[in-house]
Length: 361
Image (tube, rainbow, N blue to C red; front, side):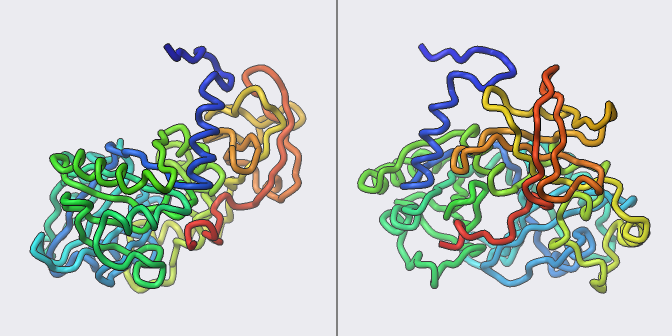
């Protein structure tokens, strides 16, 4: 009987989402994320191939996970992907799992295959329709995982950005120590036909730890707080990685001639045209919506890409590309919130939080 009102304002689900976020922050939550794509990349040249595709360092060590960005030939952000290195096992040879946004499967597959060379030993196949993902997040996530999966899951034995094949109950799984929520979290990749078995094992193990389900709207709130960006919302081909606050993921000096390298160098010489910032919005009734304009003296000086309420920080948050001169923390920029002018304040020059303090617990 729950029917939220359709509007541009925060709706009746606000308190429901807040409760889900609170439980993830204090205990542990479980969420299914069944839309993300997954490619398996094999062959002896898999890492050199990815090194040519990514503008930053590509993780090569077995059992480790990394995040990277692809550029187009103009040096603009083309895509974002995680790279997970699986060691040889009875489930397959040494291989890389490439994971990116739900909507980008064909986009990314076409881009990767377009740049394969005839002399490279690289094979790419999609696992998107074979695998799904359960996310276990919160300070008690490690306790729940330890209760239903064999092995040592301590911070020392399985640190952040680690990868391990295991069984959740009797369901085969591949666990990645990554998070889109900002909390200690695990992505648990399981074959579709083992999803229910893994789900039941996690629910049973979580009974004594306060495990509750959480959904995509809670994830959206938490990722806004942490500075994580969505492809085609905040990650756009109109901007280069430096304009998009991805400096730490770009290595223009690396030996590999990655796609967009020369164009990116030229853009670096020219300087940024816009900068992505985090804003605190002075409104409690509605979030800032993608495409909303930031105004100054009657002129548009920035554009919102994402907005939502941050339940852990108690702020109405937004990301926006603004003129570089306005990217300093403390800068006040009026926002056209669907016809109403409200105040905003730049609270960080870069939305990406380098501390990762919550996830390192």
